[in-house]
Amino acid sequence: MNTVNVETPGGSYPIHIAAGRLDSLEQSIPDDATSIALVSNPTVAALYADRAKRALAKTGKRLVYIELPDGEAYKDWQTLNLIFDGLLQSRCDRKTVLVALGGGVIGDMVGFAASCYMRGVRFVQVPTTLLAQVDSSVGGKTAVNHPLGKNMIGAFYQPIAVEIDPDVLRTLPSREVSAGLAEVIKYGCIIDAPFFDWCEQNVAALRALDHDAVAYAIKRSCELKAYVVSQDERESGLRAILNFGHTFGHAIEAGLGYGHWLHGEAVGCGMAQAAELSAKVAGLDELGVARVRDLVHAIGCPVTPPNLGTDHWIELMQVDKKTEGGTLRFILLPEIGKAVFQSAPLDVLRQVLHSTAVP
Ligand code: NAD
Ligand code: MG
Image: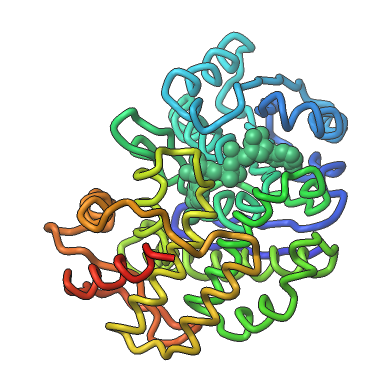
């Protein structure tokens, strides 16, 4: 088993990564817990809830199961309330431990519910998508969507453990695998050039979910995310580099309507665009641009952005949370493995949007 430790002002906790970890979830439940509330959705539950329940039952503690409907469309306040309904109906108390079994949607919702149920109870992340295993389950950002904005209602709230079983990825649709790989290669781009090289060399193994390759990619991604959030839990500085590719990506998601492209697909394409912009204003060489674009393509994500129209692109990017006072700021790469936060002149941005929007 691999263990990565996360240390933040808001809490320190282990990430355990091991094939079959799903069958040992009892190890993540503290002795003083009074009961356990497992939260999942029908898709994930049909595949894995029995195993999770069997493992958690080994604690001898009372186990409550709460099911939420599946999908980003249900990551909202009304559905969040179903968790509180379940917890209160089952008389869960301040020592109940919540367990989130699912992708980023379940993880974000259960984390947020844990942050405010009885003013805060402990929770464990059991991420079952690649994106959740390498990104959303680590670092303590929790939220639900509001009709006027994605992830707008939430809290920073750290789990007490993250339990990762890479074997569960075998049932994940391959599009979801590619979308998760986008966040994996993102870490190479922004902070770890040797890891970027490694991803280039192992891309076929990663897409085929080769056991060792996937386990290493998850471990390295978690180490890098743990490092970044330990420096800056609440995104007042360094943590912003995790948004590489996301300003373009969010514009794609919003411009096409959420759900047309998966988040990771939009981020993949956005990283290729951000690499081009980096060449114009941050010093990335042409080889670097080509390597980012080729790797995004190799993991199975789109590299040709949708044609949203240059003005609409810019409008969409301006609503991004990273905008300050109307100036567009981007995470850019002076070289692969290094990220800077800087603004780009509008005319240069227009050139990039124009050149990348035409195949
Ligand atoms: P998701 O949770 O919607 O999961 C994708 C689909 O795969 C769902 O239908 C799910 O039921 C299904 N699924 C999950 N595990 C499966 C498995 N092992 N086998 C088969 N099917 C499985 O999507 P996601 O990509 O995991 O997460 C996206 C969410 O994560 C977004 O809401 C995003 O805002 C959030 N997010 C949060 C953070 C953070 O730091 N908190 C970071 C990135 C993304
Ligand atoms: Mg992301």
